[in-house]
Length: 302
Ligand SMILES: NC(=O)c1ccc[n+]([C@@H]2O[C@H](COP(=O)([O-])OP(=O)(O)OC[C@H]3O[C@@H](n4cnc5c(N)ncnc54)[C@H](O)[C@@H]3O)[C@@H](O)[C@H]2O)c1
Image (cartoon, rainbow, N blue to C red):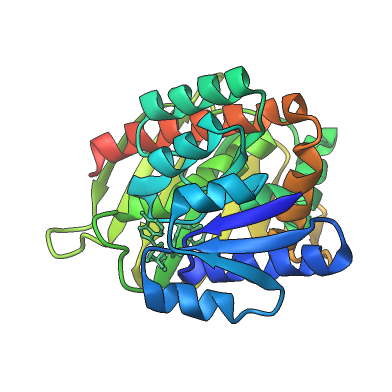
């Protein structure tokens, strides 16, 4: 199985390196790359393990079995649809698309073509998230009351996409992974006229719990945190520090699961899933659910 990575920017380059690791292990047979920017394509071609660089996307599609879409958000839909139409399995970076109709079209097309389609929800493959999910499923914490997510870091915004589209997919998807719920309604606002890079959102979930989301590109501290406040205790997930802490009336317990190579784990999982695309339908559904949630959030705090 040969993999083609479309988009050799910041994230695409990381993905190419990990695909090259899988090629080296013999999990896949090779890695091709494509970018419309010649300089980026040239750089990617130099990565050890990359065999072919394509300036023409359609040509790459003819030569690979799997495509990893790492182009900017607004290009996800067309790059994925072109690949599905010619029978390629597709892993699309988050967000799957930039509106729910397009996400549903991709899901239908993938089912018809019997190919695998999954969003790059990388934290589903993170050891700390998996550990937190097991702990939160244990009865002692009781029912969820609310959660507080902080996704912050200082960096230049990607052109045209605000913090909601860029940052929210991760925490909203982690909450779905852990609670099994998507938000039913949103309120929120930008943090002041000058602060287009920071948004505060509040989501209501079916059955009672709610969640707040602080999303910021203006904050010098890199936070990837979610506190889960449940009936009998609090569980804190710190993905920047790879730590998971629980607090209850008996005190504090801290666990630091081994740091995992989350992206490599995701790519290994997707490569295995391509052998039986129906097994990945839950992931396609998570991609669609996440786009629906983010689109609704972006409508209240654009
Ligand atoms: N899963 C994650 O944690 C994670 C992290 C970062 C970024 N991402 C996602 O990855 C995607 C890319 O982000 P990035 O930070 O690498 O962006 P980037 O701007 O660094 O890279 C995008 C690349 O795509 C190329 N490109 C643009 N249009 C193209 C086209 N039509 N065909 C081929 N190549 C094209 C650009 O030349 C550039 O090299 C985004 O969707 C982003 O949301 C995911």
